[in-house]
Every structure is written in structure tokens, then in C-alpha cells.
Length: 423
Ligand code: ADE
Image (cartoon, rainbow, N blue to C red):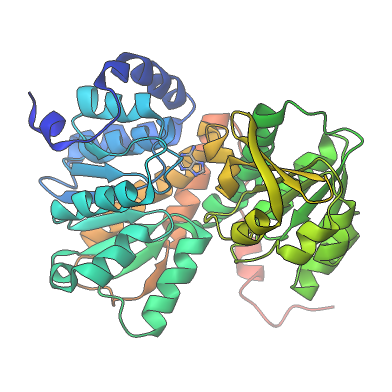
């Protein structure tokens, strides 16, 4: 048995061929990451470097792992959520691409954390996280190993929030690049990616018609904006709930109805959380809901709906379709919870499409290279993706799309740096 096989824990290595076919399909829609992979294969920026990766185990992540491996890295991968793993992809990564993988779809929480520990056992020198479970486990359980790590990257808003809290507590042990905050990540992956894939998850789970329905979106950040946009495009009446007054105003002027969350819960046929915060849907929301509503979460963690309160209110729970658990309340009202309240686009569908993950993962690959090039010089803080890398990803994506743009003339450049020219 190859060393990566014996070191891995995946559901079924026999799925490798099917997984590889899907990885190749996604790769065809990831031209920017592919061009970086070809360069990495020539330049080998990660020669012999151990990289610990905690990302959703999808075809897109597989192409990022291939890119790191092409650059000379030894990759150990675990899942960023117990329901995200595509078992065929995990098998293909082990069988065909030389990664060590610890990830099984539907694993319980103990196994999820055992898999994170298994990745940490490989003593990563670079970390790549989505939600900061890998980095927070490392800080909590292995402070001695922090010195081995030259840096890390973080994929998502919720993870960046946690890392900033770690930094504010003065405990962040190495520099982390917030890939999430790159413009070519959050403007596209969060908005158009999650906007589409969250609805994809809802539709695959329920096969419902959105036209004519009331869709309530809790949270009008980049993900909420994308979900609202796509729900409106599908013919739904969209209600937005938001605590930030500027964002709430933006939603209102965009044409959405803006309501407090309990009123939205009472009005919606489909309720979608995307706030990054906990207990957004609570007892008072469940008590207000209509019969037969669909409830789901598109935020990273499963804390947005208070599931303990829902269980307390439920007289009966039944699995009515894959990914749909129906909760029957005392008065007979039914609340259809999708994907156990976990991130619906990954648990009930395949995550964001490859074409947007191309930009996100190009940023990941370039941020990892940046951390290696600047090793020992960056402070142990959360850093942004350097603007030139972000713009490079945009330029390469435009080129792949066949889109040409103008450049400023010398006169225009000079005009932007002068204060003398006015009315
Ligand atoms: N996050 C959202 N969509 C994803 C995908 N397709 N792969 C990896 N991480 C994701």
C-alpha cells in the first residue's frame, strides 16, 4: 500500500475513478488555478513543505490540493464541516494525486476532530483553513507546534472573525492571510457563488418552485446579497433582515422588503440564514412561522438556527426526504429543516461552482506562495491578500473569459495625482 493510502482515512478508495472524473470536469472551469499549477510545477515553491489543509472536500478543493502538490508540497487534508466531504473526491485525492486525506461524509463530531488532529500529527508548516477549526485546534491543543508554522491562510468570513479574536487576545502564533477578504474572493465566491449554490442546495433538497414564494434572507452581507439577488431572479418576493443600518438601507433601495426577523419569520415560505452569528432563528421565530416552511442555513457554522429550541418545540421529527427533516410542532405546524442546519450549499449540493472557486483558490495558492516567500518577516497577525495578487487573479480571470479592458493614459494617471486642477 502507498504511504498516502495507509496514512489516510476515507470512506471507500473504490470511488477514486468516479471522483477523478469529477475533479477533471471542475478543472476545466478553473483556468486560473490551472495556470498557477503549471507554473508551480516548474518552479516548485513548496518543495518538501508540509501543508495542513482543512477545507470542504470538493472537486474544487481537489484541484487546489493538486496545485500545492505540483509545487512540491506534502498535503494532508481534512474536512471543514462533517457534511461537506465528497467521498469520491477524497478517494481520488489519495489514490491518484498523492494527498493524505482524513475525511468521511457524515462523520460524527468526534471523528471530525480526530481527523483534524490527524492532519496536525503531520506537523504542518503551512496551514490552509476554512472556518479556523484547524488553526484554533492547533492553538488550543498543541502550543508547542506553533513554532513549526511559517503561516496560514483562511478562506471564509467566519474564520477571519475567529482569527481576529485570537489576534486581539494576543495569542495568534503565526501570520495568517485572510483570503476571504480579497476582492476577487468575496465579491464573486460569496455573492455569486453562495447566491447560486445556496438556492441549488434548497432546490435539490426540496424540488420546490421559488416563483411566487416569500423568501426571507437573514443577513445582507456578501452571501445574503447573492442569495437575495438569485431568489428575486427566480421570481420570489424577497424579505431581508439586517442589523447593520447601512446594509438594511442598501437592501431597501435594492427593492427588497426589510423587516425585523420575527416578522420575516412569520411571512416567509423559505427562511435562509447567512449572518455568521448564532441564534439568529430562535424560539420566538419558530413560534411565529407558517405551516410547512423550509428553513436552512447558508452560513459557515450550524449555530445560526437554535436547533435545541426547535427540538424542544417539536412533538415529532421525521426524515421526509434526503436532507429534509420535518419538525412537527404541538399545534401541527411543520418546519422543514434542511441539512441539519449546516451549510446548505455544501451539505445538500456541491458547494460553489468551480468558476468562482477558481478565483478563491487562485488567491489561496498565491497567498501560500507569498507566505513562503516572506517567511519570517510577517508579524503574527491577520494580513490581507496583497493587492497585486488580488489584481493578478482578476486579470487572469478576465483573460480566461476573453474580456479586454482599457488602461489609463499618462494624462489620466497624472490627473489622479494632482490637486491643482478643479472647476
Ligand atoms: N466553499 C464553498 N463552495 C466550495 C467549494 N465548491 N469547494 C470548496 N469550498 C467551498
